[in-house]
Amino acid sequence: MRAHKAPWECTYAKEDRSRCLPGDRPKSDQEYFEILCLCILQAGLNWGNIRKNWPKIKRGFYNFNIDKLAESTVNELIERPGVYKNRNKVEAIIFNAREFQKIRNDFGSFSSYLDSLKRRLENKEVIRRLARQFKHIGEYTAEYYLHSVGYSK
Image (cartoon, helix red, strand yellow):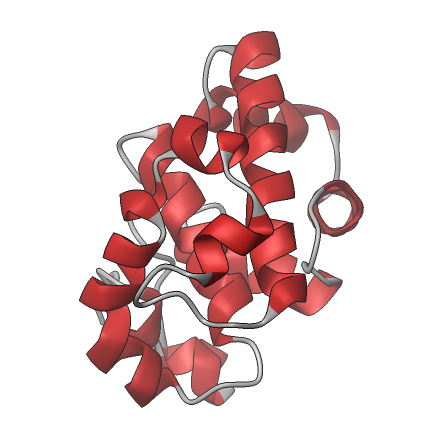
């Protein structure tokens, strides 16, 4: 077994949790944010299609630049090539970029924020907190996200 480099490599997504190690911890807030957006965008879609189109999707979403997306509008993003036209998901990405900015201001980095949650709360409560804080993230997606960024137990 090895840690996966991208969430779509993980058998966890295929419900075989015993064979997948948690992902590597991202090195930057932008990488944490990109993986969160991947979890949002892939929900209800085929992993293979997302994987194949990921370079175009990244370009469409300004390479998941948190500050650029926080300033963006839904209409602006929907007009860009590579952006899925689901308004709810695009709104969630903009909202979540703004949440990342707040977290960065309060904790210095998203990694520091997750570390502070893990020190104070049980895993289930961390999952609930992320599901409440971010848009278009339910508890299952929050759990998968934590696994993908190396915060699983």
